[in-house]
Length: 371
Image (cartoon, rainbow, N blue to C red):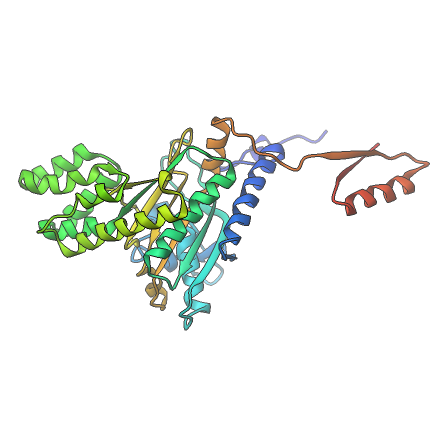
């Protein structure tokens, strides 16, 4: 027996192998979701695992530079392993659909990579699946993406989950009304996006803002579920940008009722994203047993302009690994096509058994030859 180098048997930190029954369940869920997304008219797209660094640069507002896996090609160009599908799809759309004005619908799936300094139990390579709707700026597109997400989670087997929806334009509007400087706005964004409301209040208090101004931000942390509750945020003196954000959510509320998915939606005006390219509604999906959001997304009407195409867009991303963990912890079975027929082959009847195995395979059965 050859000596074994045990170091070769391990994966790098944050990476793992998936195989056997676990892989079969994962693939089954991916196939279910993909089939459902296709019914909404979305077509598959595959972008490279490696992209030029500038596709994800800090100017784009995507993943922090320190969390990117970076390497050089033979010509000295700086490349990264994609940390996020949306900029890759936006780049692709700008290249191949530069002059198209009609709505474009893409569906993607694959691995993304994040080189976090502190893993905290998280993987560096994860599987994401999602959809992007480009050249469509209406609230009906917002509703379609949310409906597609809810429909996909239901198809995966989840029954208890909630999609929290916000609108970053509300935050931007009240920041302008309060006269926040860029640094304070960034710190406040980080506090609110991390749901650290005490830090947000202390920050505003330390900057000398009065109680009325502090409450302007902190009241946004209330969760609401109906159009009537959203309307209570409207005030006569409200900044026009913030007012338009609330009215858009109120319109979206009616659209989700038409889809029949209202019970899965709640509204959180303090919801923000670490990705700064979002320009309108943003959302995250939560369920039991996942430990973090299983889905996220939003509107990014300015992102494609970084690649040379002026177009509105909105997208959704499902964290497949998080979803699988939630299904496991909630004891939701994932049915896989694991029925197998075993055909024992011997020296004398080998040709006959091989022919029989092929007949069964051609009929759609899984056949394993044994001896």
